[in-house]
Image (tube, rainbow, N blue to C red; front, side, top):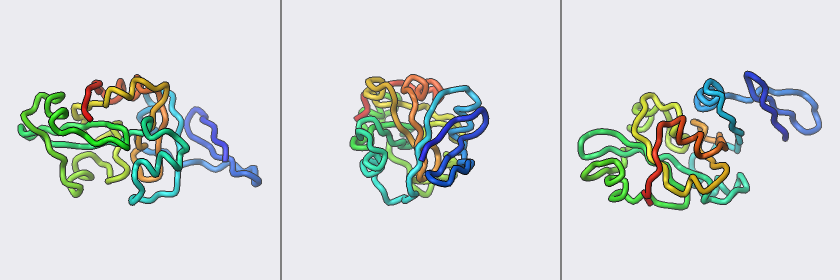
Length: 176
């Protein structure tokens, strides 16, 4: 399957049929299009039970380049977003230090959708209902391109880490 980016949508050419099919755009893709940020979208069979490492395998990518988005709440009640490689674990003490909190804890899964607009397995640091302070693990900058969820299970985007950090208003930090 090949894809091409046109000015307003992504078109897929299915092998053998020659027909153009319009691919679904997520809110993340619309935000990036609106800011004229280059990205490539990747899809896979949606399955919320897949781990980040399994998704990296499906994409044929190094898990160190594929990032997951985690949402926390600080002792103050403020929310924070942390973006870490899929094979890594967020260090809550380092996360608290990076955010200037005494402590942070993961939010409950049931609170994710109302807070961010995204479901578990499809949470992206781009295009949340509200912009929260966002921190990227410092290894993101080591790559030409990184992958994050495109805001829906089964959709990933690949883009330059500096563009990702910029569009999300994020900072780089040692958080794993």
